[in-house]
Image (cartoon, rainbow, N blue to C red):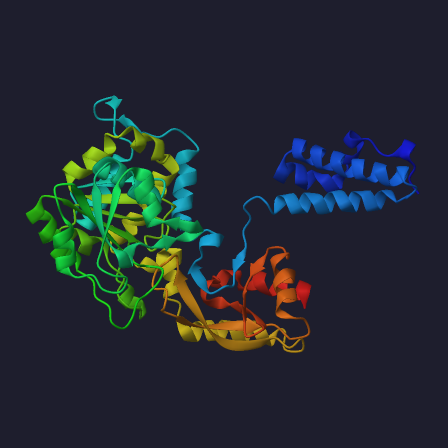
Length: 450
């Protein structure tokens, strides 16, 4: 039993071999702080007459350290079936891109240095050039996310002036971020036209006046209206904008560069199509269907893009060398017309249904006695793209010896964590967003909980 006078010192405690891995993963000061906090708790126990073994103290410190480790980014298995899962980091990055990043960014790079002239160069100019080529636009810029791209656009081009937008496109995106609030914060004046379900050409035409700065078209990517609905194509709005001497901005959200119809899905708007339609500026995300890192991209007319770049706000929203490099590597796949399957997002999207079934059956056979079953299920693209479209998939349904929420907790707290889904009170690990090379790891995790 441990007495107050013989509680081990913090320095002596953390020299124990059990804490060496945590010093490496968390840092020595954080391990010391955690140990000190636990020892203080145990000191209070002794004062109140509760004794304990030193092994109990060690176990509690280790448990606290493991909890802290999980607050850092760790690798996990996505068994939700949602490929672009916002909470799980959206688009996984390609190994080739990451290897390139490790090779270049462990040293210095010519981020803002022109090797030809020896003078300061434009940050990210090489990526902007790739965006010209792939989208057909005259110019491009990159900021830290698509909301920033839209905010920058409205702040520079429409502050104090009216922005015409369909009521049916006043959407809310993740985290309670609403288009009307972005407009208000930017200093632009909202001018709603049409109705929730129908907005026609004449609605836009009647709303434009000498106070109008631009027409804003927003792709309703995270919901879908059906029935008695109507909207105006970008090409028609572009013609109207030119005739009225105002700008047309198209916020695409997901920003696809490859046809989603190739994967048996409905058509998601292509960035190049929006440019071809005559939009003055098109904004979209980098970490959705582009399959790159988080970023907000704006492509369009050179004069418009240059106005945005001259704003002090643009510097506050810019990205660093890592994001430019990762975006550039993703774009090269499209430009070289390589198999997009090398990009993890499209590798998962194109995973054959029969292959998913075979993998599920192989894993389930190893847990037949425990009652694991294979089940048909549905995955999704995620990231606000094609919200109504389901991706046929196969999954593993865990036995009903525990309620689904208990399985959810067990798998979430496993090492590595496995994040699944609950369907009709059954806990399911959907293989749609599980990479084949993760199957063995998944089996190991299941062995610890079954």
